[in-house]
Image (cartoon, rainbow, N blue to C red; front, side, top):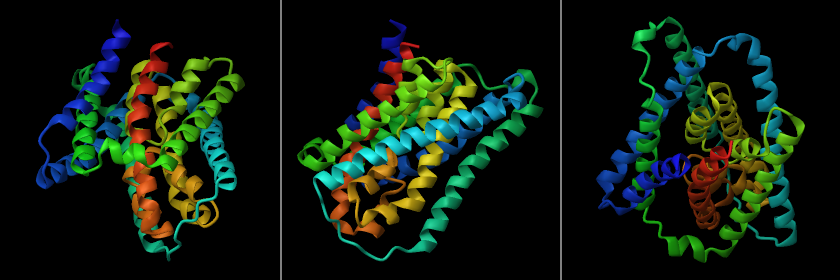
Length: 303
C-alpha cells in the first residue's frame, strides 16, 4: 500500500501540471522556479550526506560505484543506439557547433556539483535542531514533478506528436531496455546490490535531481549520491560527445542526454544536428521523462 502511495505522490503532481491552464508567463515561471528548486534540492542532498556516519571512509566505495554504474548505463545505451543507427540509418543535418556555449553549460553542471558540496558544509556546522524536517525531500520531489508537468504542458508538445514520431518511440524503448540491462550487470558485479536496486539506480536516465531524491528516500544518502553523480556524469558526457557522435550516429547522440534531451542538452543537439533532429530529441526526451519516475519508484519499492 505504501508503494502505491509513493507512486501516486510522484505521478499525481505531473498530471496536475498537465491539467493546469497554460500560458507563456506560467510556463516561464515554472521553468525559472524549476532551476532554483534544483539548486535547493542538491543543497539538501548535501546536507543529508553530511549526516552519514563514516562518510569519509566510504568515499572510495562511492567513487567505485559511480564509475562502474556510469560506464554501464552510458555504455549500454550508447552501444545499443549505435547499433540501431547502423541497422536503420537516419541522417541528421550537420551544422557548426558553438564550443563557447558548451563551456557555459558545463559551468552550469559544475555549479550543481558545488551545491552538493555547499550543502555538506552547511550540514556539518548546522546544529541538529535546525536540520530540515524528515518529509522535506518528499515535498521538494512533488513540487519538482509539478513544475516539470507545467513545463511539459506549456511547451506545446502533445502526446499525439510524441507517439507519431516512430523513431523517437523506438529509440526510447531501445534506450530504456539497454540501460536497464546495464543496471542488472551492475547488480551482478556487487553482491550488496539487489537486482531491483540495480534497476532503480539505472532508471534515472540522466534526471539527477529526481533520481537523487528517490534513491535517497529508498536506500539512504549514500546511494542517493551514487544516483546523483551517475546522472550528472551522463550530463557531462553528453555535453562533450553529442557533437562527436551526431554525424554518424544521430540516434545515439540524442540518446546520450537521456531525460535531458528534452531540455538541458537540447540546444547542443540542435547546434550539432540542425533543426531536423529536434523533433526526434523532443519525442525521445518526453517519453524518457515520463518513464523514468515510474520505473524508479516501482523498482525502489521492491527493495
